[in-house]
Image (cartoon, rainbow, N blue to C red; front, side):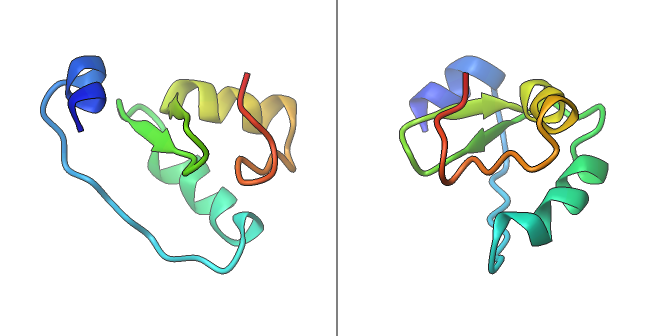
Length: 70
């Protein structure tokens, strides 16, 4: 929590439940446009939303659960 507050300030966590990355990718692409935040990969990384969207553009099938973000 301290890392998130340090990087983006005050925040509210949103914890969507999904069966796989492919089912949530399109939703995230729409919802996080223009919003500041961090995606917690649950693999020791916090990826800023801007980078998440850039990764989706570069690698449309990017799955943060199976690869470490750059």
